[in-house]
Image (cartoon, rainbow, N blue to C red; front, side, top):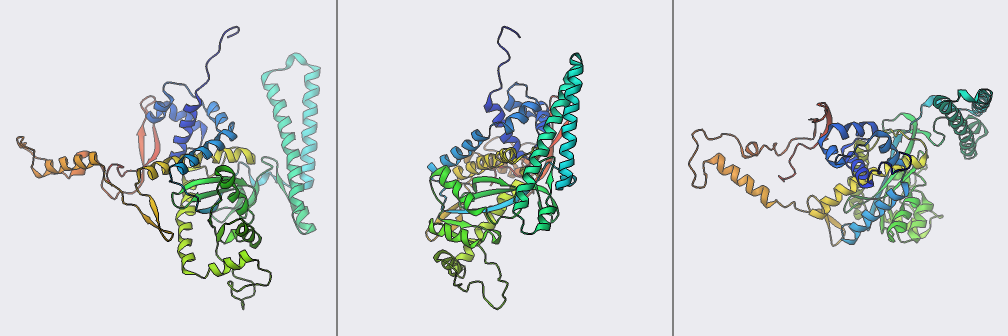
Length: 453
């Protein structure tokens, strides 16, 4: 309204809570999240009567990158202050995420030149059309002009990215065959987890092995992990002022120069040895070009302790990647490295919130004992839940604490009396009926009760 105050903005705490809760539930679409805010009781409770649409949710998700990055740093630092995260041993691995671009959008140098010429002609034609008939300018015409201008800018960026990628190719023929996407110029064709090659991004996660808390996130458009070790281990130092003592990675990160550099910085790298091309030479055999750090790494790989430590990488980095594959977006709906990174930041925020609660309660965690051995902590029973079970067992056994026995005693077990599922029922998907619209939405839930260990 002119001359008066407009509608107050939505509290950012509401939007943060919606995105974190939805990320924990594996909901990655802003439109699906907006529907849940109208249909699902949990989302309606988080909104608190505030109307939220998909446009607001989508803009908030990618519009506050530095704030999300700072939130990740603050949450991990709070856990470090309580002694739940030590950063003594960090595991790292990457997961491929499908880009919002098709394989047909990748074009060669000549095709990109023709596309740019056509885009220039279209922008010029629209400009002349508006100059000849200014009164015909409408919202739709302005949208056409904006779309043509954005397409021209994307093609120009694609040409720049293609030239930069061609410079990294060794052969002349490979440089000529280099292609770039006109939809998302920053994405690259890379090998996906299913073995196929599609446009995507390479997301990297660093995880503290003791608590399974994600301490670092990064995204690149390089398909391999060969040059991602040093940059990811720099994040704990910049974020929390501490360098990890040990780094657990797979063979894709085993670059000798990086191992030597990290050894000088005080970080021991635990990475499998790649079988040499010369089959007559053992991988642990020292080379004349090895530095002190690489030589120590080769000797360290032959010990039994290193083999035991390697097992923690599979239980942390691979576990986090599997959760990211299930909870996080398998295909991002935004374009550009920076926006993709902001979208992926919501997963570690939700993951750390869940893992932080587990670590603070001491349930299902792991404690580090002298000698570097980690053991699972015993999950304590909750007194209230145990009392309910005892009451239910008395009900099924006939002991009613002095009260008269009913004529038809129940013959069910104590868990059935409490309305709880069995101890060992797998995870499933349960349909939750919304109160407002009367529709059903499939929300992944854990059928096993959290109150019963």
